[in-house]
Length: 375
Image (cartoon, rainbow, N blue to C red; front, side, top):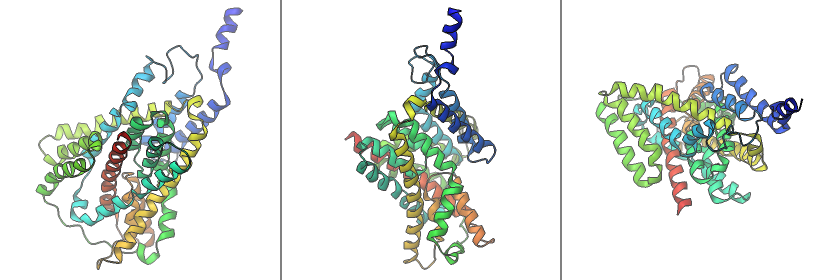
């Protein structure tokens, strides 16, 4: 009987805390949204199930939890805390990205830069609320709507906040269909939403080959701390555009990025262990993340409207919302909102140009913030 009671006292049913139940509900919602609503399932499903795994109560000191040295989950989490998984994801993203639309209309790159305003506005807000500079920088990067970049920067500056920042970043990426369209409609008129963009010119192979090399040099000379992200990103793109290493390019955009995404999502979800995750700071981070993402969307749209004051050939302001680096979710939403205003208005390719420049912009911002905090 004594052994039986000892066994029962070590079960999750006995050790469970109300905070574990809250997080299990959150994980279940993520899984539901991924499967039923198909909101970014590649992200939400691994994260949601990871949240469930990370919040099963266990006997401490047994080498089970993600924060316990020498546990299996702790070793898998190493790829998050060192920034290995985000770098691998960027390699795969580069191998999947086509910069033709951006090269055909370089002015759209400005919209990707403008959308990064959400990062710096949120950084200042977080500082005003009492977060330290490294914590505020990690929270601000959520405004870039780039999960791997958010995780990478947080791992370097505020590793104790990886859980809430990663969950916030990926949650808002998944909720793009809910968050972005109302902001786009609020800041634009129907006439503006109906603006047709010119046909994209044919981009030569030489241009596509030169871009990853030139992009790497220009961006990393400006923010050398972004090399761990932009180095693999531009390398992956060069693999794709070279046409001589199709096996490597296919592996980078399929098996490699899929493997990294699985482990990244699962371990980030498992890091939301209730006793570590549910704190007042986490709640503040979720609030500031929503503000960051909304400001990023709005600043891109408003900057497009400002550009139109000086351009003869007007830009559809909706494209500014695709300046955040949530690829391809925000580009798809821009296209759908444009179609609702005018069923013959196809904005997807132009939106992808802004989207891809947003990926570069958020990585550069992360490098700048990292270098500032190191100095």
